[in-house]
Image (cartoon, rainbow, N blue to C red; front, top):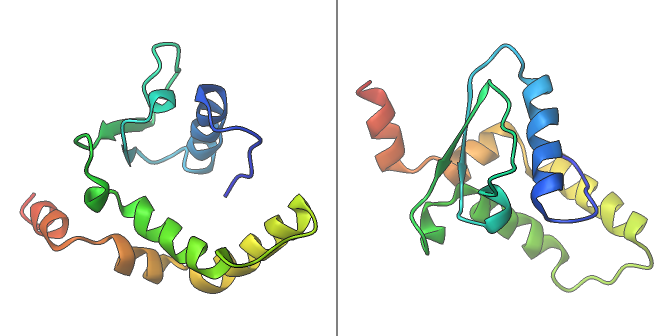
Length: 119
């Protein structure tokens, strides 16, 4: 998890680079929506990352939306004195609720799993 100051192509590239270093011995496939900052021509994608774009207007296919739903549900009526307080709360929620089994449960669509089992 990275807390970045903006949601733009520079920050996305920074995320990709950090993820690439973390998983440097793996080929990593990332499914993305069609956000403009995901597709900018100046984006440099590390060699061990492949980006696959979901069809437009299909949030039901985007597993990240389900993970965001968990985070939003936990903080939707909270107020925070500072950005640090918000980050601390997000860390708490992530450490408690966003585990590998939970992510798998939230994002493992039957059709996707069936497609990969036939490969």
